[in-house]
Image (cartoon, helix red, strand yellow):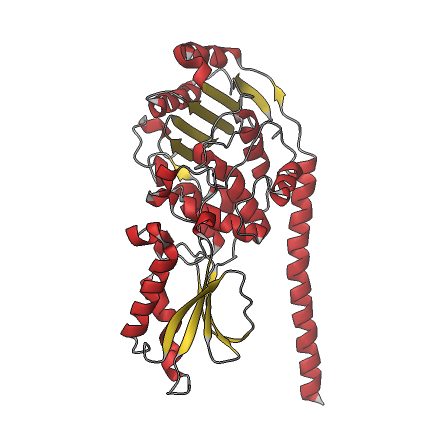
Length: 411
């Protein structure tokens, strides 16, 4: 009787904990929605001394650059060509990574699973884990020697292949597809498809590494690799082993600090539960509308920003960053950005000492495109700067940030 009482009490306490956890998540989400929906609308309250300084500095390349700076109160204190749509390069990740984080949560993981099918064959269900490598593949199959199977029969290990035309967004250039930063977007990746063989054919590379692992683990007499179409139905019985990726908040550092295109595209597809490259996407478009900022002139062709067809405005990006400060996962989001002179894609830039460690931002780079958007720490300023079709643009962006940082008229 006493044991049953303790059991009932335990179940009640467990239910309360589960309810409290879910309630807390629901509350933080509702609070986020209310805060974003009721945010004070931005208004133009231009700080003329600073605006004039910047306009003087960029006078020779004014048509190539857009600059937006918002202060803590939501005032645009600088506005130069802010509503002109421009190619953002990897500043596109500012939007897509926020979407992935908001949908999936910071602790979401990508799983690579080895599953048993009812006829004794096996199936590897991959998820595009950017860190999955040869050692993980060996770890995945390590327990197969413990499984009792018919010694006179060789069992298949199934992987699914998609058509090579579906490996990249259609707007990615063919020259980019040959580079490691333009790696094919597939679930079956080995170290983010960064090897030459994998760049040419990721599926063949995965097969080769799997067959090599089977030989190394003395399993090649029991199993062979079989490739099936991606639409082939799999009715598995049980899961033998699972390799988890790092949690999403760690992967976001790859996306935003290191500007890793493959990871950006993969987690975006997990957010949609859709591995097609179709844009515009209704779920993503509706989510952006829910963020209550001006994205009327935005155009999306991918999640990573490698496509030259993407277009955004600094007006919209700076507004969006202001709203992300209200997101329930804002700490995870902004901590994934680069820090000027400290880490990520901004670590090695030549910049004034007083700026180093104080610019928290996402950078982007393509041929004739440079973009940097983020926060000036300690000043309460949000900025977005995009330059298209101009040389030495990085030097000019750093100079612009230095002018803003040294200005005393707008504090």
